[in-house]
Amino acid sequence: MLLHELIRDTIMSKAHILAGTHGSETREVLSVNIMDSPDIVVFLRHGDLLLTNGYLLKDSPDRLIDVIRGMHEKGCAGLAIKTKRFSLVIPPAALEEADRLGFPILELSMIESTLGDIFRESIGVLLENKNQELHYALTIHKQFADLMMQGDGLTGIIDKLSSILGSPVLLLDAKCAPLAMSETLWSPELADVPERVSLALSQQSLPDASTSLCIPGIGDPRYRQLECLSIFTYREEGYLLAFPPAYPLQGPELLALEQAAHVIGLELTKRHAVKERSRRYKNDFFSDLIEGFVGTEQEAMYRGAKYGLKPERSAMLIVAREDAEQTARTSTNAERVSAERDRHYHILKQGFARLEAEFVMFAKNDMFGLLLFEGRGDWNEHALVGRLEEMVADIHRSEGLSYSLGIGSPFAAALDLGLSYKEAVRALQSGIGMNRRRFVSVYRSLDIGRLLRMLPYEELERFYHEAFKELLGKGDQEQNDILRTLRAYYDNHCNLIETAKALFVHRNTVVYRLDKAEKLLGRKLKDSQTAFGYRVAFAMEDVLRLDSFVRRS
Image: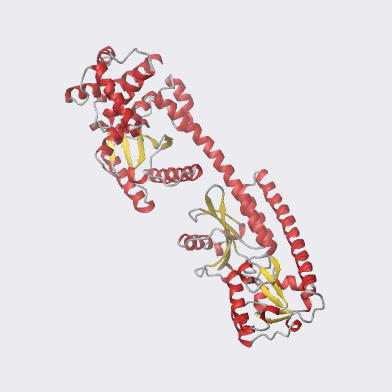
């Protein structure tokens, strides 16, 4: 409670304020202390009201100025002294300094009660006030929570808070864009207030706690001063703003603002949970389709209808991956990493939206996939690549994110999506292998997959089995590991370090497996003819896997 309220409600009402009168109306009392040490200031905390009889200052009253300054720096509520007990004379310079700082000094000599009695009564009033605040906070929190449970959402909470405060209320997201506002702010004369507030706040760094701000650009002076409270869940979600008639916001009104912010945080968390579940279903579906766990075209159409998949509808698969210099994360906090990934997802989604084409976006491993559906007419690859390059550059310039894109071949059958995804990944890996950054790479000009699909299935199968006959059919895990390592080795241009990263194993493990492969195959893996043959065989593997799924369907 404020100091002047504590004085009013206790026996200190008989006290005289010697200096810093206006400070009694702004300084909050959180606790009361009694001086019993020359260096008591060291032990004081923010919001403390200090009671003293002046004994330790009677022989050196000039030290009082240092005490006042020290307490002011700590944010103490004030100093109450019984000067007549030991004939302490407060120097005029000390009173002037207290007036300058707005630091209240109270004279208690006219109160017959002891400092102990004053202390006990003051603490009792503070505790009673705190109990009332807690009860009010619980009551108002329940009202807001009931609105959320009833499905009124953010608008209902905002309107309820506005009626409690008797002032307009505005909710902004983390980028200071309006999320919800009270009915008052929808009126034509106040239509520019949300936009001006949003612009002003986006240009400054806001503290985590409640803070009072002034926005001078607003025409109506009633809405230039506002109270701002940050909203957090497991990440920063936005800001809750109120335009109170009494400035700054205090007491029950501030409590209502804080409780509304808590409930809004819960509502936003609920929304995130719903979105996350829906997004997880979508990611799982596309992952199943890519990995070949969707066996028939009919199943793909049934599960993918909600994502825009239709029979014989032409589409293109684009993959986006953050460039290497950006991927080193200092934070190991899973929630922060998830929040950062969500931020990247929304930034990329906004960028792709500027293509003005129908698309669906999903996440797989450390990459994002974009299924871009064809509009009217044929694909214009040159124009698409140009617009994607502009988008990548804009994202880096505006958001500081460095992403590169790989584009697979257009396809019409849903079961071809997996192959197109692998093509896009290979196009991306080709650019990464050349140490490029913020590039857009098209698969069609980089691989022979399209030519291989023209060959008979039996010929492809025969070539593949002849290439790896020493490794196939063994049935043990080691042989499978060697095949995976050999493929990753060639996919990463025979770079041992990149191969180890791709497989999430140690470099020595890669060396061991490659040595074993050379012994089993009886060939030098770095020989150009051998390497070419195995790369062709691995390219056939994708075609064979896709054809087997098509045949089963």
